[in-house]
Length: 416
Image (cartoon, rainbow, N blue to C red; front, side, top):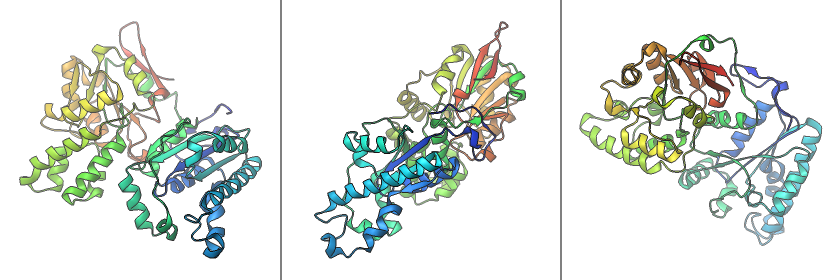
């Protein structure tokens, strides 16, 4: 893959010189995973032809009389041969697109290909000389089934149940709980398409005595887990998911007070805590976060989260972090984010001036709290739309910046 040599300034679409060439992106996932929507978003972002298995083959198969195929093409006795033929057509079409455009996005379930073997080798050969970058979208089977049911595609009535796929090849894994924008924010950096860092940003001239980290979406990529837990909460209590999304980054007790009568607050907090702790498995660090966190001297760092102790502890452990000495949760403050109290509390416990603290955040409520406390703010994409990240600097991963310890002992942020 050709190295990336230039970057887009701010958000928006990547510039052409930024896109590796040749580029082949393979988007895989079961029916209802949202792979076609994501594939289209990637194709638009990288200005590539979109080759979708359903578009290439389904109209033809649906147009054939069922008696010719011995029943619906998904369930007929010829289904294995039909499947093989569909993928032959897909590979040929994708190869043509790649050879003429220099890049392609290919969308299909790719169940056999994910397992490796001859089907994967055939796909790799078809997409040569590009090395396929596979994006695998998966999630809660109940969500996938609900999506298939709601979209009303006739073929879904004939689709056999499929078991979850554990890819045997390298993939970028994405959860269906994430929005398309959140998924795209994870895919583009994985492809080497990065948000431009302005080396002249004023934050690079500042010196700091400590770094205060938010947890969810900043250190731990728990966004899908949070969404899934609160979706289940919303279903249980019959409340609005829109209200939950609009108040991301605020404490659960605040959300409970907004959504439910007072006599149900304790029940709601206990329920969502159980949901979030139970779901805190298989979590990974945000891109570059583990190395960036480790680069901060232990006595100069703190975690400041809107989560409770059980939830925050479970997520830290799941992502492989050590709990820092200064660990401020919602249980330690009267006023949660967007009030400045959480960051002021962390600065006080570290014994530093909050105006000499760098806060790393991903949510508007956290950014507002950090600004109110007088801190410098570094914001991460991946959770919130970039227009709402009113920080001193916005990055698409903590590997885009680094920390330097000066001779004076102060910390300075630098472009990576």
